[in-house]
Image 1 (spheres, rainbow, N blue to C red):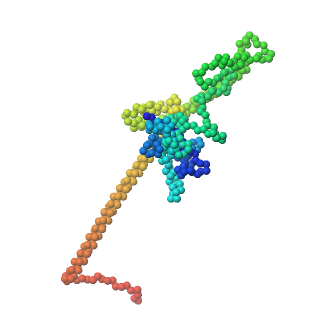
Image 2: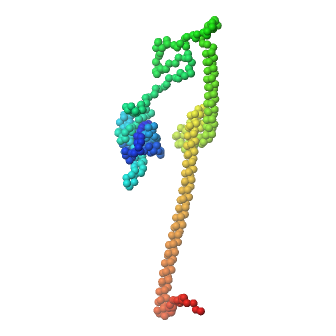
Length: 389
């Protein structure tokens, strides 16, 4: 079942005095800076139960009235039915508040957003589901701004600049038919013949004329002026489209490279889905509608540049990681070699001390039996501080 898209208010506008009713409440700056749509979107839970994930948040922004608005999509089938029936349309933020040892608020993070039956904060409800408005507020206060009314599906055509003999009528229902009275109603300029100029007697040649020469000349002048304006607008539009096509030609190589790489990365059963994009990239410079092709091409170029930049940075990071690993390995080898040599030196010193002790014992034994004469160690004479003359 496809997901159900929604919009709503997750947090009311911050207090004007800057104070908070609760430590988890958001300030005006936090409402502006918080983005619940990053990193794939914040989890959307039901009644703050992490075991019951029903969707995710796609974006968040500061509303016109300073409130914290969010948009998201619900994937859970049961939750979709609850939202459609009006059972669970409340929105509640799950926040983590960090304080110091004295209990003073240091910072707060928004961990998740939950759909609920009744929110703690007033006015935090889903107000749009599937592109349709499902919640409207009415304020009875005389000082409150009026609640906006829904606009009609279309507006009547403007009568500015229309000829005086044209009759325009606007009907809300296109299938309705004018009554006999409205069919019989005409304007005076449609039927009345303009009065003749003083001193001019109409002849048989002028009998078929209805409008004066000045009036017709004025209409012709207006028509010429409108034709010139239309030609100028068409020329400007053509120049604008030509500039767009030149920009598309400059991006064509980048777009083709990105699309072809996506085609190579796609599995075999999905390659046919990318073939239309390859055709789009090949004919990008001659697009019939550059207004619609330019935004898509621009997005592809920006994404391609970011992808290449991330790949380059990742490659550099990989090289740095490899160099760091090699250096660490070399350090470990040198450390092990040093430790081995230190251990060997200690062993040799112990062996030398052992042999020295054995030699001294042997010499002492030989001295006892008179084989060798034990010579006492020579003691250097004491130094005198008196210098002989």
